[in-house]
Amino acid sequence: MEKIIELKNINKNEAARYLGYRDTLPDVETTKTILECEAELLKVIRPQYVYRIFDISFEDDGVHVLGTELVLKGESIKNHLSGCKKAAIMCVTLSGEVDKILRTNEVNNMLRAIIMDALANAAVEQVCDEVENIIEENIPGYCHTWRFGVGYGDFPLSTQKIFLETLNAPKQIGVCATESCILTPRKSVTCVLGLSADKLDNTEKSCENCSMHGKCAFSKDGKSGCGK
Image 1 (cartoon, one colour):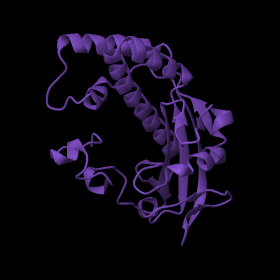
Image 2 (cartoon, one colour):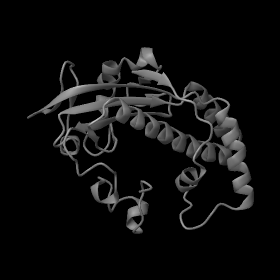
Image 3 (cartoon, one colour):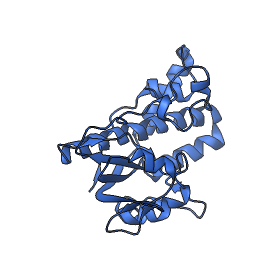
């Protein structure tokens, strides 16, 4: 399924967290710039998504997405999907126009570029949250895991191309992968949700189940890096 989502505002608290604000709030001038950058971004953001739901099977070489050539490799994704019989694979993007505005500010005003990048990161997570809700509504009776991104843990980034092909994402929403497996447009996300008719323990992401636990700046300070 693919669709366009309307985004009326961006979670500025989340953007501030990306900017490194934890126990303090941005000052008045920074807050003013954040609001200006949000308004500028909202003019060009055109959030789109595509997802498909598949049965999965656990094999020695990884988790097979049945009916496709896609194999989800790595112990981290296998553990993440433990107890699941199905998986939703999804891709979200904010559009190529966001890339243009980011590049322009990287040349002309680095501070605004940094703020816009943080806002765009917050925006793409908001869209992912909305798609998660849509998936939940369309497959009632199933519990789902938190989102597990391609390239997270030991889930190979090289999976990107076949992942996108399985979703027909290049045609449906214009998301492609470079030779180095970087998504274009830049503010795009690929991830997996495990689905189970039975209760799951890993329905929310936390520092305890994160592969970066003890490594990122937030968890080293005893704080959550994922906002949970």
